[in-house]
Length: 170
View (cartoon, rainbow, N blue to C red):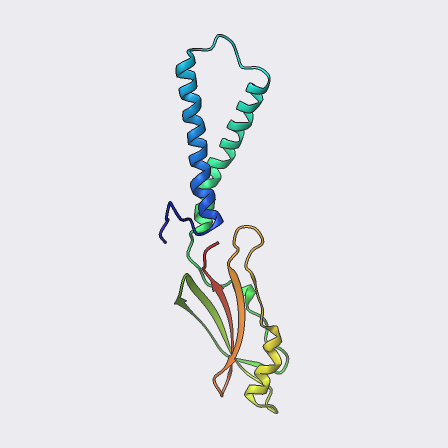
């Protein structure tokens, strides 16, 4: 994945790029100010001390978190978890399972259930009955904001129930 410094594509890229740059600029400014002003005779007090504590505290929190955010933001998509696969509705039987991957803007992985509907109805009608289960939602609530989607199709002989995990940008 390309990391364009001038045109970040996501909030994660903006955060990863500009937060460390802003902190480096402040540190360089503080270093230059100290070099120009000369050595201090006493300890900082009041607002100067509070600002220093706040800055260094924030620096201590953000710098270790930046690589973690980079790992989360720029990871490849993986197979959806087994828990994301639904149980087939009553009357439907699992013929086989599968998985695969494709590539678009970001990698997409999926798990597939091949189902047979109840014997007394056609495959198309059986697929229509479980189509309301189709949904698209985020995979995680904090870090993994990739889309986890389900889709129902048919190949005229069996129902294909697919759970997709899209590896698009944050």
